[in-house]
Amino acid sequence: MKLFKTLLAGVVAIAMTACDAHKDFPDTTMKVGHVVCTDGKVVPVETADSLGKKPIAVVFHINRDENVEARGYAVYLNDTPNRAFTDSIGVKQGTSADIYALDGNANTYALYANTACGSPIADYVFDMWHYGQSAYIPSVAQMRLAYQNKAIVNSVLLKCDGQPLPDESDECWYWTSTEVEGQESAKAWLFSLGSGAIQETPKLQSHKVRPIITIND
Image 1 (cartoon, rainbow, N blue to C red):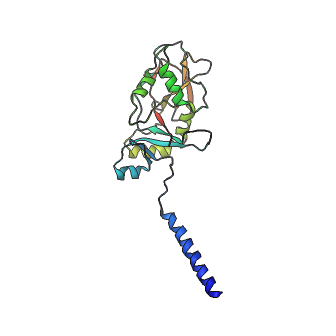
Image 2 (image 1 turned 180 degrees about the horizontal axis):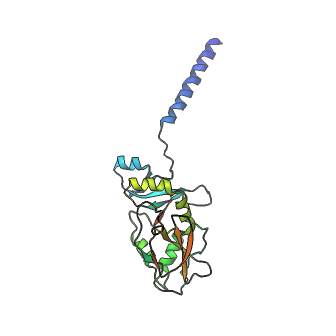
Image 3 (image 1 turned 180 degrees about the vertical axis):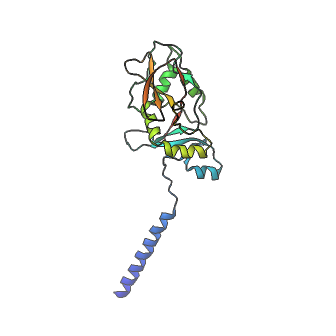
């Protein structure tokens, strides 16, 4: 009996040691601050550098809601040039106008596909698609998520030679893809990455966008 107990204790010890060994494996879970590469891989920026992969965007949000299909969102390394939201006033361009919806992708398509007027900023973002990564103009709610994790994202953007999300009052305002409810034919929302504030703005004004992409798998 004593011999059996001794053997059993040895087996348990070996099993526990084997389990502990698993802790040495790298954590491959996607995290805020990881980079999306041109081949679609999402990895730490140090891994991308060691493998010679080219980052295209930085993860700023991980989805925890099982009712939302997207795994998360990533922000492009650089801003677009200033462009108008629309080329003519007086037209509702078909966005949800919901400042709480994570629907920038659908909004951007609505702007792009509207036949009653053009959208210079949506046209620009559509034309910048690369490597199968479909860029779009974030909604107000998606810009809020980027703002909440700005410090982490900025540290990685600098490592990738990208443009940090700004604090300066004359640099921090960006178009969202969300029109102003009740004034959709004339105004859309600007978002401040300096303060998290939003400002309803005439759609003929020119402002920049920080495009984002959805991470699906």
